[in-house]
Image (cartoon, one colour):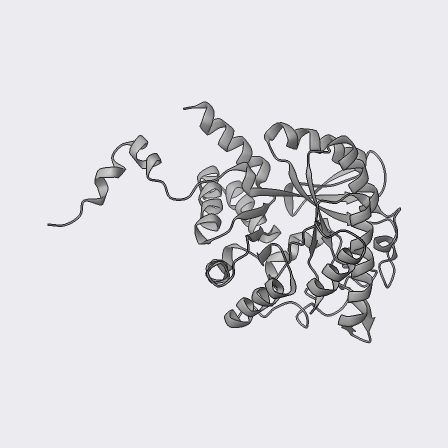
Length: 326
């Protein structure tokens, strides 16, 4: 006797009842890119449907997100002026601090996360203070702590350090706790690879390095064991949520990190992954909506609890339509 697995696949209702992996809008975080100015909204050619926006336009965007059931966002700031140490990120009147205050004032129920890094704020495009041709890890930790406190005092709900500085979770946790922010969580970019999938992001965030690359502080895509060790270390240092970035080409790492750590796990469905699906849709070579949902399910099936994705609005509409058809 052999097992007839097809029996429970024959009817759509039985397929739905035994489905193991589900998508919910509670799974998603939507990225927003905020630029100095007013009345500014510019679509990024390499990322159709993704915009740089001034704060007033971001507030309009948040109204749309709210209507779609998306109330978790991660912010990236693009200042008017950049310098060698990213001074705008160290100022309570900088683009990020102003954005957090404006969003929380109008949408207090939103869960606002800030990307904590310096690549968007420095004139050299690297993730911290330079020492000759390399980022000075420990000097950068000092100003990351200052940046984190500015975000905290502005009302952010979670901080997400993305620069891959060694020891960053320990330093941030100590700084936040010492100022009374003991309940402010940290979502660590704990396993972040030096990936070529980030290309379009550097267009929208205006964060491409002016020289060299980030391989001295971001991870080698070939290294599996180091990838797991990085996330384990951040868990030990006090991170509240871990992350694997990118997502699609690293689902083996997602599964292993999930199996070897006890914390919730986020994946970042990055710009290159987004752009490839958009290009394939434009070329007419895929059923875009089905491939999109299949991709999101693959992240959850691999072990992700949370998905940062530029597709979040599209997913919300697809899930709403699916509910409406039942």
